[in-house]
Image (cartoon, rainbow, N blue to C red; front, side):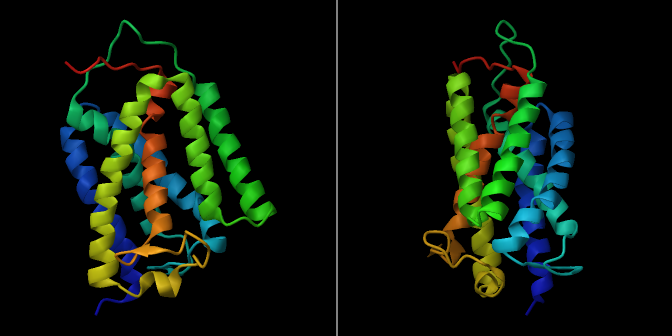
Length: 230
């Protein structure tokens, strides 16, 4: 029986398997690594909100303590969600439609998301699971309105990432650590705590909505358009 402190590390390393596959297929490997490095930092920062009311996972450094696991999984999720579609479809950039990058707007949206998560989760005490999903959804809809050409990319990436997550979670939380979420999760809320194959629905919603959003980052921020598939 493996110690619970290895559960989060194993989860993070399992996500590195699809990351590596996507990386090998990606025509933008340097960009994928850069995005992953930033994503690792976000994986650490996110625990400011999630350790309060979502979960208290044991790490190599202790229970509810930020660790290497947070960085690894942040690195992996930014890469998988952000590049899985482009890596496997091989759609080329349509340089006739390229527009100027909108870095300032992108930063403003990021800051707005952090402010909303803080105000509604910490300030008003609404569970971070609900707030996170609504933020991801609202930002996705905002980008869809401005860039409807990214809707297909967004949804396909979301479903692909969801499928990967279901497999990884089944291995980790059914075969290896079936008691994990009952012990360390804080999901005693309507919808969030409902489980499918011992996997919290909140986790599947999170991974789906995150991939739905982050898959559009490159195209939206950099003003990149893709050629229509033949």
